[in-house]
Image 1 (cartoon, rainbow, N blue to C red):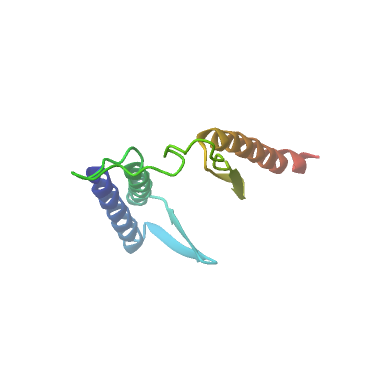
Image 2: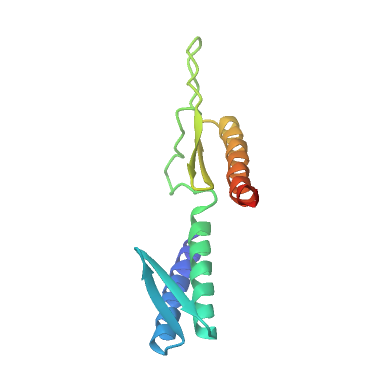
Length: 139
């Protein structure tokens, strides 16, 4: 996983360098719309920079995915839901939710089953929002 992290960081730095080179040669332009940087380019250098940035972000997120192995001599941590409960104890409450950021659903939950249902709900809500933006102006 450490290799993916370094590769992602290297691609991010390469992408920024390529975009800076594109702006320096006049091939690309950099604007600030409100507080969001916007880059436009009509050449290969700018395109390579954008591709490197996207690949760097993807590899960076991919490096955080997957199981984490415990260090030598360290016991794997158990969540409270995995610990055995004493007999007659009240089970822990299960919860979950969906936060919509624009049309993008952010899903969370304490249980895998609840989280899956929240994911289904998030996809349905996302489809409704996208459908409203596409089909309501057509009326």
